[in-house]
Picture 1 (tube, rainbow, N blue to C red):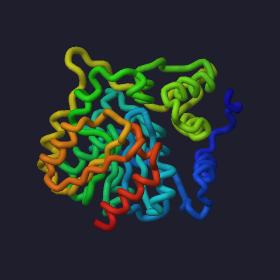
Picture 2: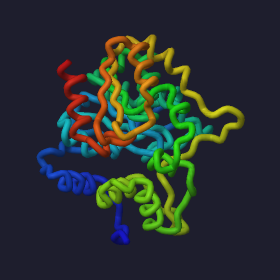
Picture 3: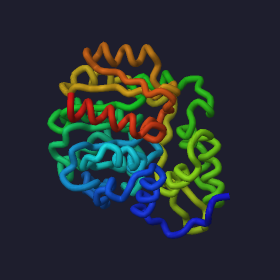
Length: 304
């Protein structure tokens, strides 16, 4: 059983994460939450690490800005980590459209107001697809791009995947609420059997909220249901090819979300793209190997 849930303090949990990683308070710059009007009355929330961000980070579907906490302690760069629309502390959309096309528009509004002139954009999974779209439509905002464990062919890659292979991404389609926090945590732990339980608990706290009836629900909204063919990101291959920014692709060595043929096409659409495989890392490379991913970002965005 986990400890009883107390008042949620996201900054205190960041300090717990640092201690667990063997890092000191000196490795944590001032972190504050900001909210930006992204059009149509929608507010998008983000975490600012330090002042004058040098890098912007976009999480995957069903995640939130805190997925980057440990990585940012290793990176030691001022940064903005965005809660994508419908996730974390950002507003939910009435149309429940959280695809890369609409997300990129919201992220552009955030960056225009809170993070102009960053050296690079890092996106994982849905955030990586959003980065591809952003690079094509707002090249002024994307000087360099790091895409983590996703390509526009991700739907095809997921066909036939078991729940065990999908890991925590399988939870997105599960029960909308859990009777207790412990039930929510144990469902997450079952989907992530190799993750440290204390670290995982902090992640669940960042991504959970208690409802009026005492049950617990995820902070993210769900995509509007569709009929017919599955949602398709393959049009983003065209955006990747027409973007001017240099890219690098990072694959989790233990993940199946990017197939060899997908990585090969990525390099063909963007000749010269470095492809890094992080040994032992699952889909969420930033969670499994934050120091290694921070090193890749530092080298590609700031030194290459």
